[in-house]
Image (tube, rainbow, N blue to C red; front, side):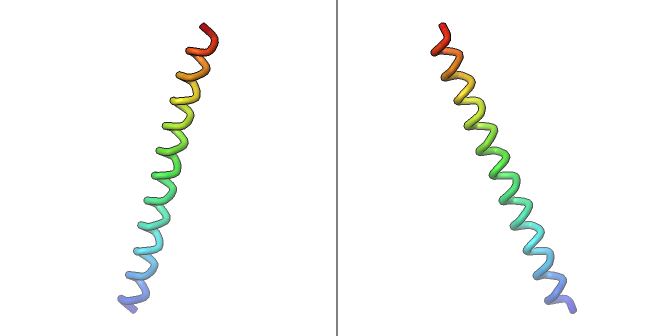
Amino acid sequence: MDDYLYKIFDAVVIGGALSVSLLFLYAIVDFLCSLYFRKKDK
């Protein structure tokens, strides 16, 4: 039973870390794109 719970916990932690890192990457790309287009407009 405990082993099963640990597997679920691992899956949740890994899934959460992946989603957070994806959001972080998206935010960085979005920021860089906005900077690039702002320079391009001027």
